Length: 294
Image (cartoon, rainbow, N blue to C red; front, side, top):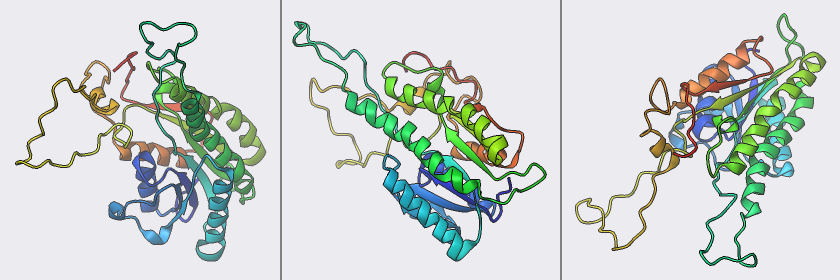
């Protein structure tokens, strides 16, 4: 599938891997409909004439439907660039223990249980939001005129995670959601390929520099930039997951660094353009093998 003068929907396209993908697709001459809670940052240097932003909550079918209608209207009234692909990169990372820390004197009547609300929210956004976006866009992709020698009509890229393979302690909900996203690739590819000329691929990123892994910069404190003295007995804060991951040289084999957004976007581009890529999930991770804990 060609990129130039085609429209691609990118959920989660305003930050992290989604923003990197949006930027590269626009640079290649594509039009991108960004579905996200916030617009792309003002310093992203995107060609705004080729980007449509719709505030979207992927946990809401109505919100996705509104974004899809905006996209179709944009194509009809302004761009005439057929909708040819969907990159589902919207998602959240959560952590919770299936066996929470118990009080030393806990009884059967006072034990603590894992809160299911966080589990439900993670699957709603990461899994249901992905499937909902796909099932709402596929009928429109199927209406495209066949393109190229293979008669392609569209391509779908879902974003899983290495947590789908090597979930860590506390990643029960996240691993469940990403494992399910990984598992929908083949059945979708088998259904949509011969029936409609639509390919389906997945990417399972390793440790990448995104908002989930990179801590926000702390504002300098008063007194010459020195950190305020911690109160005696104060609990030491853990570094964010990604910051701690970079300290483990045994985890990421080579290159021994976090992945960059543009490297993810390059793989999306190759998937879109290479017609033989279909029906499987590519690990993009520098041969990382996640330990049980960071």
